[in-house]
Length: 114
Image (tube, rainbow, N blue to C red; front, side, top):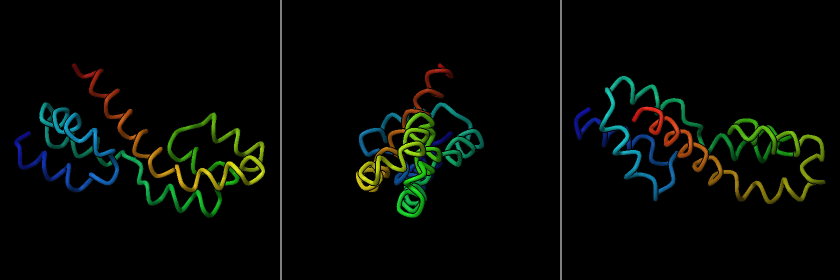
């Protein structure tokens, strides 16, 4: 993939990846085909959707299920969001947790490729 295509994908998806990981993601995308990179980037979870889920039905753990934290989602479901305390804390943490999970997925895919 050429540099312009990589930059387009980075700009379009920069809000879904932590700032410190952009260079690693850029290097990962440079070694891919454009279609492959597009498919990979469309599989990232949106932090905005995660915060909306967290506010509306976070006590049931749906926000954690959405980002792939199944264990934490089950914990929140069983405890009704930690009796509301875990739910309130997660409202502030879920967007960064979503970005971290996206970055972990990308790096795991990158380690399998090389």
